[in-house]
Image (tube, rainbow, N blue to C red):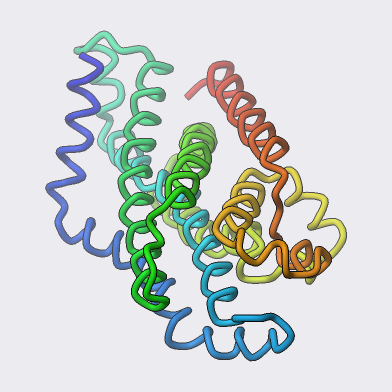
Length: 267
């Protein structure tokens, strides 16, 4: 029964060809905007950094991957909102003998699967871009670690939005959340505004925000060739951290809290 329900959600998603197209287009647009409109200015702002072009490309790509990992799991809960709007949630409970919490976990698993597929596709695209531009094979250990780190973030994101969407009752509120999230995720990951430019209170917040922590260690892994030659204060200012243990603890801790609150809260 549970597998059939997840399969049902995925089939509905796959039938919406235009929805899939625009979902992937939204991911690609962020990379395209960077390449064609922001890249040159960012490179010019780092005149003291050796190989500033590759440094900037790698830094930005790492941040964009983490933004995608955080935001794409929310898409799966759009189906939950539609099912709630059409009163199908009660039908599932009555006809399929599914409890509210079981339904929520099934939507969460769907979100993890959808987020993982989207993030993997976008990560392949980003590493492919780096491989082509710098004539080297970027699909190495860093590629695997990037996926593993961001799969942790996807798990947190799916559980976090499973909790948040419990309190949404209309598609308009869900759409508003989706719109706000795309922008907010970029700021909280230290990508749209670098860590050093954030106010002190915001730095204290992002230090315990999973999206920033994963972005920081992803940057560190992808930029390993620069971490020994770049001053530490510059790396810190740009939100590059090698503290993998702290990042993983923050993500796991936030995921557990979200799961517990999910279990305790009611639809």
